[in-house]
Length: 222
Image 1 (cartoon, rainbow, N blue to C red):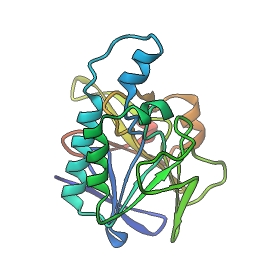
Image 2 (cartoon, helix red, strand yellow):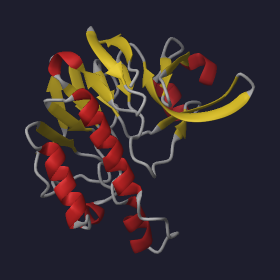
Image 3 (cartoon, one colour):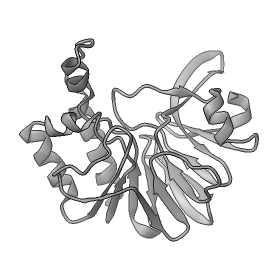
Image 4 (cartoon, rainbow, N blue to C red):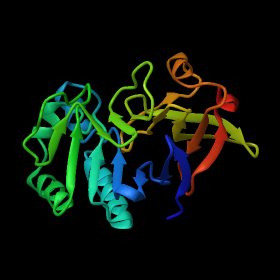
């Protein structure tokens, strides 16, 4: 696994190709927008029937990130479940899997707009989590500094070496870092969207996920 090292808010961080973030000094792993149970939620509400394997795939990739970094702390940055009923509908195998991943480490569920209330799955439930110069919350706030958030599922679409590509990405400005969605069935918001333009600036960079992290100037994607 090749991580991309960078400094944010005077803190050394690693962006992982999977879309996870690691803070070595604190042994803290952060993932955002798992949206576990999305296929169940869509089927329950009468939508398109999707293969119900995304929770297994997402948890498999989450376990791989945990195995690779051996974190003491895991922060799930909101919208960990597609809604509260989807969280309650996890199979016994999936619940046991989450409990096993939590064992021996601090686990923090940040509240998202899809999952605003605590679930009986262990760990701590918080609106936001502050450690040193960094604030972890689900949705970016105006005027924030040292903020790490999710919610928007940023995605870069561009032509690279003659090929059109679209990849989830981290977006980093001087004051904030927006995480890509980690969940398998999550869509993406293009970097050129006005909402993201308001949160970033011309000096920001995008860190595209994939086999390795590819840094690009945000202005190129606007």
